Length: 233
Image 1 (tube, one colour):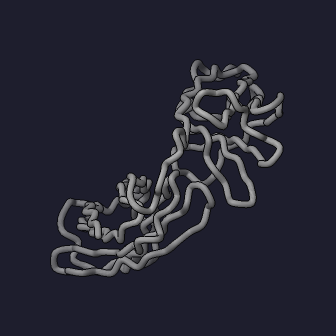
Image 2 (tube, rainbow, N blue to C red):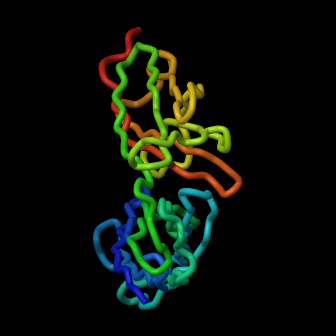
C-alpha cells in the first residue's frame, strides 16, 4: 500500500492546484489536509469527491474522500490497486460542498511511476513539443509519427482517427479551437490554422495531438503554445 499526502487551500477565485504521483499496481491512499482561504485549518466536512479521468480513454472514476479528522481538517480517499493503469496518467478533479453549494475545489494531474501494474512502459509515451506562432499569419506545421524510437517504421494513420486542438491550459478538457488536419503520407500529418484563428488565441496556451481507435484515445504529442506579436486591426 502507498500513501500520498497533499494540502488543499480553498480558493474563492479558481480551483486550487492538486497534482500528485502514484505507483501503478499498488493500493493508494490519498490523504488531504484542508485549509481555508486565510490558511487556517478548515474544520468542516466538505464531502469531498475525487474524480480521475483517464487521459487515454476519457473514462471517469470517482472516489469518496470523507473527513477522517474534522478538527484538524483531514480527509482521505482510497484508490484500488487495479485502478491506475493508464501510462498517460489521469486528470484530477476534486469536488466538494462549500459556500452553500457543490464546487470544483481542486484540479491537477495524476502521473504514474513504474510498478507492478505496468510491466513495460512505452519508450516514448507523449512527446513534449512547444510551438510558437506569430499573430496575423496563417500557420502550418508537419508532424511525422513513428512506431519505433529509431524512426524507421511510420505510424499507420489508416487505423486511427487523428485530431489536434488548442487548449487554454494543460488539463483543460474544453478545446479553444481545432487544427485543420491533412494526411500527407505514411505517418505524416499537416496541422494548420488560419490567421483569424491564430489571432483568436491568447499569448500562451496549450496544444495536444491525439489518435482515437476502438481501444480509446491516446495522446501522442503536446506542449506549450506561444503566440508572438500584436494583432493588427
